[in-house]
Image (tube, chains in turn orange, purple):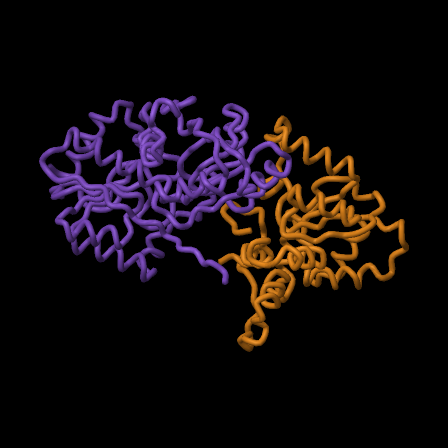
Length: 192
Length: 286
């Protein structure tokens, strides 16, 4: 099973309580502590999404690669941010809940516009695309994808979250680091 | 009748110009086995699993006509949308114990594996859609709002019911346990668009625009494409539900239709549909 789907499954509203799901989604389990450290030096009201991403690139521990899916998908990266949501997928509902929670920066593992590279050329006339984009703009949300490098990190951040939720840390086989063979979401037929 | 003669007879009866090539490199025709092999009996099925092959052999049939490829991949030339891995190389199929076991079974039993997909789907009387609609019991004219069997999708108007009831009804008709549903179970639904196999975002978008259904029923979907697309449609109030019955369950009734059709021009040997069976079972959390 793809670990990404695994985390999704563990976070699914049907497999754990909704309250717990919200806690997990809001905390981002593993990603959030890294961000908290990175943000401790921030001056409130002036932090931008672009600055957060700059710090992530400093902290992630692997060289930044190109091409990568890890990029801004919507919103103004230079607008001030008030709070950060991490999520498996920036669905419309997650965006709404971020707004309710006062978070205007959404870091998503998977696409926002329903295809691997968030190509929107075929979606421009799609009323759902227009509605979702308008919601992002109206609420001054910024969406950034964090997929390839979170997987490339050692240990793979998705595996780390999975192992923690499953309680499998104690079964780690010495000398192995959980990781995937292909961390780019851009290749044809890749798992994401 | 040899394998070659069987192919020729299908070509003569299919009613559309035979397309011999497919972008993914697996054209319709004999995939494994010799064209001169005598056909002892024909099985149609969704996928030539080892289990299906054993059933075929046990009933004295050596020819399997299937929709999916015997070695689990459609090939490196497949459109990117289908998300397939490259076609397995000969080296891999020789080295892989599952593939070599299957290959040996095929050789030892002198089986013919025939793929028949594109030309079957190209008929202007979609056997796959017709089979699925018939299996659901929606082929009654009063329910038919806009059935066009020349395309792969149709829309039906059933008596308004809840999404949960609809999903239960579909599961009973198709005898499946692994259907998955997006949407509020209590939503009232009546207009149902249906298609078979994998659906893509562009197809969902088109079906919603053309048919304005409450619910879409299909085989399967890429979990990080159509699935969140549908979640967002529901959140945005643009659709009420998606019922995914599984790729196999959505295609298998069409393979039954194929057996019925083959019998109209093949009388020398028995023709039988064997279901590959729903692959999944589900866990109910205590």
